[in-house]
Length: 245
Ligand code: ATP
Image (cartoon, rainbow, N blue to C red; front, side):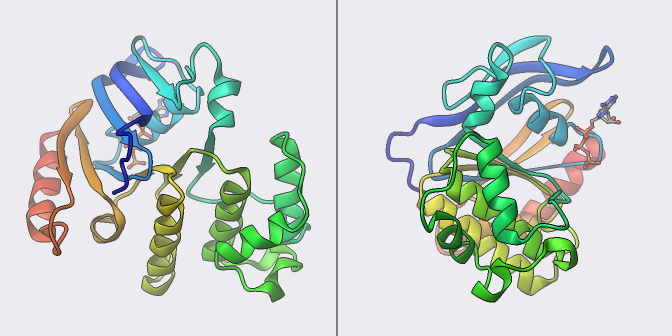
């Protein structure tokens, strides 16, 4: 982990939030630093996607506060989103446009028109073969779509990336390739918050793993030593937190 300044890019402090008056999170504290991959695990309905929605400014907390690279997603959601890339479980792209055209269009929407060669460089860095850059995305696999979304995040040079269940439905090879890409982003100093049920992938790529349960962070484990994580112990914890929440 390259936490040079130990600066939290994504920060949730004592956050209470929910939907339609029903509280889902009760005092969530979570920080993701520059150059850190953080995997957030927890039972179905525990509030993982709700946490992402808070950072995106889609919902507001009833207590506590959030920051995205210093921006407040409640007071100024547009500013917070400028610092973020968000990759949902199923990446939505314009089917009739090519990979290159999708990135160009979405960059333009983000108010950052293309500089010469940026897009092809980003697509290449995201692992998309040059032959695919000009192909329509309509027939792209889930893994290829994610690469287009990652290329957009690379081209936008955002300090924070949010991912919702990125490896669900990916085969082991595509998962390994995806984890390698997260390593590239981490190397560029991006703070990455990944919601997942994929404990193996989390153990493979994350610097820290947090388990959400009972509306807060029930456990947090950091990678240490050459083995990084004890996956069996993590699995036991995961099952316990799931059962308790
Ligand atoms: P999963 O692993 O199943 O994706 P999760 O941890 O991401 O779960 P959330 O999607 O954050 O869970 O949902 C938390 C709770 O809030 C669930 O009970 C869900 O039904 C409820 N919820 C989520 N979105 C809304 C919404 N827009 N309106 C009402 N309730 C919602």
